[in-house]
Amino acid sequence: MITVQTKIQASIDKIWDLWTLPEHIIQWNMASEDWHTPFAENDLKVGGRFKSTMASKDGTMSFDFVGTYSAILDKKLIAYTIEDGRVVIIVFEELEDGFEVREYFEPESVNSEELQHQGWQAILDNFKKYVENNLS
Picture (spheres, rainbow, N blue to C red):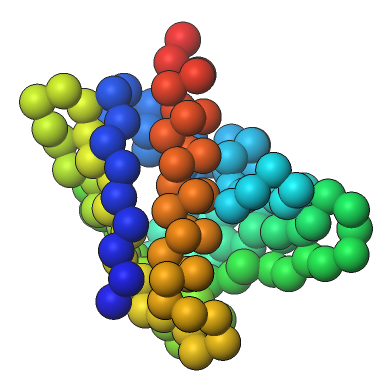
């Protein structure tokens, strides 16, 4: 398993909404400035599916990131299986000064684990920045 994490100074209600609502997912779900997420849908329930289209801004590449939820503990944990069978677990843990968001995911075999860690961490860092810039 690969782990990425960040600490966010915001309420869990704000963190949860910005993590799970499609209109917010499209704002933060990219690993670099030359990519974006033009489409997202999310059926947040056990057995529900999500899909995010991730695309290069120059239009040369895109792919759909799709999965099915296997566990949801409201504002505490989300687990899902990606279409290729890999498992992802996201934990939202309360700290004295905010919340820590930790993602655990099984690596794929095409890219190095270091590259995967960097990409997922960059997306999580974008999420933190998005939350902290949208606190009102």
